[in-house]
Every structure is written in C-alpha cells, then in structure tokens.
Amino acid sequence: MLQKYCGEFGRWQLRHFILTTLAWALEAFHTMVMIFADREPGWRCRNGAAGFGCDPSAKSVCELEPGSWEWVGDKAATTVAEWGLVCGDKFKVGLVQAVFFGGCMIGAGIFGHLSDSSLGRKGSLIVVCILNTIFGTLTSFSPNYWTYVFFRLLTGCSTGGVGLCAFVLATEPVGLKMRGVAGMCTFYFFAGGIAILSGIAYIFQTWRNLYLATSLPSLLFTFLVLPFIHESPRWYLIRGRVKEAMNVMSNIATSNGNHLPQGVLLTLDEESSSPLSSSTNLEQAYTEHVENKDAVTGSLLDVIRSPLTRTRLFLAVVINFLCSVVYYGLSLNVVNMETNIYLNVILNAVAECPAFLVTAILLDRLGRKPLTIGTLWFSGFFCLIGGLISSAGVWKGVKMVCGILGIFGMAGTYNLLFIYTTELFPTVVRNAALGCATQASQMGAILAPMMVVLGGWLPFGVFAFCGIVGGIFAFYLPETLNQPLYDTMAGLEG
Image 1 (cartoon, rainbow, N blue to C red):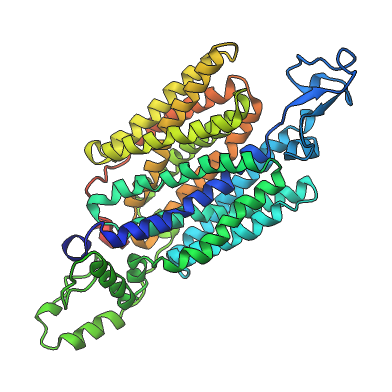
Image 2 (cartoon, rainbow, N blue to C red):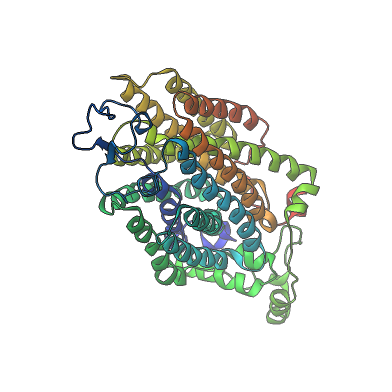
C-alpha cells in the first residue's frame, strides 16, 4: 500500500521519523552520562606534601600516602571523587556501569514484548520516557554509592526500551526502497546526543547537576513531542485493529499528496487478496473487513520453535553481543586515553556520523551481509593496531586515532544490525526478537566497562578479537536486501 498508493517516504514519514528518532538523543544522554559522572578527576599534592609522601609525577594516587594529596576542583564533582572509588574500590566504577547495562538488558526484554503486544510501539515509548525522567532525577539525589547503583539499575531498565521502540516505530511506516537509508539515519540522533552531552557535561561540572540536566529532556519529549506521533499501522494490523491501521494509512496518503482509492484495504501476509474492489456492497464489505479481525499474536517461543527464525536469532544474538563489547568499550575507553575527555567524546561522536553516511550509501549497493562483515573487520583491524601501540609520546595520538577509526567501523555495524535484525523477523515478533538481540547487546555492554577498568593493552586486544570473530559469524546470515517486511510467521516461512 505504501509503494502503490501512499508514498514510501513523503512528508508524513519525514515528520514522523524526525519526531520519533529524537528519542535516540535521550538514550545517548542516559547511557553515556556515566563517562563524565564516573570519571576520575585530576589530583594534586597538598601544600607542603610534595616530596613527603606525595610524588607529583606518580601515575596513580594509589602510590601516594593517604592524606598527602587532594582532588583538583570540587570534591563532589564526580562519583569517584565524592565516594573515593579508587585503588581497592576502583572496581565499583565498572560495577555501576555494568549494572546499568544489566538493567538495559532486562528492559529490552520487557518492553520488546510489551511493544509487540498490549502497549504497542508508541505506548511503550511513552512509558520508558516517563520512567527515565523519574529514575534519572532520583539518581541525582543518591545519598551513597549503593543507592546510586540501585537507581542506575532502574534507569537502565527504562533506557533499554527507548532505542528499540523508537527504531521500530520510526521505520515501520517507511517503504521498501527507503527503509535501509531511513534506518541508518536514525543513529545520527544518537551520535548527536553524545556530542550534545559533552557540551552539557562541560557546563554542569558536578555529577548531580549533570543527571538532572540530562533527565529533563525526557520529560519535555513526553509532553511536547510524543502527542504528535502516530502508532505504527503495522502494529494496528497484527492486533486486528484494521480500522485504526487504515486511518493512519489514509492520513499518510493525504499528507503525502496522494490518494488512497476506495476499496483498497490492508491484509496480512497469509491472507488472500481482498476482493472488495469488485464487491456489489462495498460499504458493507469494508465494515466487515475492518471490524471482524482477530489479533495475530506471537512471542519469542514462536521464534525459537521455527528452525528458520531460531538460527537467525542465534546469529543476531552472538553478533550483537560481540559488536556491543567493542562499541561501548571504545566509547568508555576514553578515560584511559589520557587526552581531553570532552574533546575525545565529541571526536568519537563525530566519527560515527560519516560511518552512518558511508553505510547508508553502500547499504543498498553491497547489501546487508557484506557490509556487516566489512565494518566488523575494519573495526577489529584498527583495534588490533591500537593494542600494539604504546601510550607514550606521539604514539598516544596515534592510539587515539585507532580508537576513533574503531568507533567509525563499529558504529556502522551497530546501527546496521538494528536494520538487519528488523528485517530478519516478521512484525508479530519483530520487537521481541529485536529486544532479545538488544539484550545480547547489553550483555556485551556489561562486559565492556570491566575491560576498560583493567586498562593497558587488554581492552584493545579484546575489542579486536570481538570484531574479527563477529565478522566470521556474519557469514552465516541471509541477505535481506530488497526483501519485504513480513507480518506473520506463516508469511515469512512461506
């Protein structure tokens, strides 16, 4: 219907796409805020302590006598400074970050299911944005470390549903020809959110104020943007709400300057073509078609039962896991680069943008599969080089460039996998499958902070391994270029 009558990507889809994908900037705020909130600030020797238990050239405060040094600036600027998360307690920095991604894993599973079933794509997005506002605000008032960990867990649970709900809601009303490009453009908003976050963190130097500043936009989005976003017509269709689906499709056609002929109706993959155009009682037949439909349901169990989708799910889970270790690992590893953290975060975000552009251009030329393999190996190669380079002198800059190029390749992969996973599964289980793949991503993200905390050559070594092995697994995925988005399991298997 989009191809023949409504338009694949007209004025309606552009407006809907931009408004919906603003949510990705919010996810960037809640996810990457830990880079600034949990960083270790600079330190200095106390007056008169230099040479007496405090060596200004020491690489770590762990080498100094207690009480001989102090943090530079506000003592409560970061969680590390306020709660003394150094030396023997340094693992707590990685722990709270891992707990956040653990929450994301839980949330992806919960909201992946709810957005396919009762809540819908838009309803789930409303819920997670409200929860993000509440939990993010409460985080800023944490009186101690363990309360902070608890609220980061809750924030992770809600944040885990933002990206997958926004992505599916934004791309489902887009036609076949523009689906890949639109999907890649979604992630400009995430990269833009990271760059904006760096500016916000520069303005709000204390971690409590930073959490407040990054939580308020979710509230504004809920009340100023979400009311103008439509529910997905595909979700309406599989829930048996054909009348609402037709209303949205009619709205799309009108906004795009097209006309939806009378008697043209939506049907599921497994249904035969509608004969209404030749019906003698068109109005009665239309009423029967839109009102007498049962909801088509599906779950992750249906995906696992089918040999076809079971294999696809396994590959999607493994590749998403490996990709996430590298993507989040390189993003968080800026704390080990010994360069300006605000500049480094912005450069990493900027490096993602050309990756999206290159991937979007090549997506419909090379196909999903070759591009996935190529970007994984590209990132893995530069991570391998980065692991072999020391952090001394001029090599520090070379190592930073390797990290940026690693981000470039893996950002392309990470975002491509959203499109790829969406196309591998039918509407009835799409968000559940995408939620499962996202859970795998969060498992990889849980591992990433632990690698970063270890420091040295190990993070780059692990990231190189994950990129290369991920590319090998991608060889077994089917190509989905120019294939339709199926609505039901029967339609896909057929």
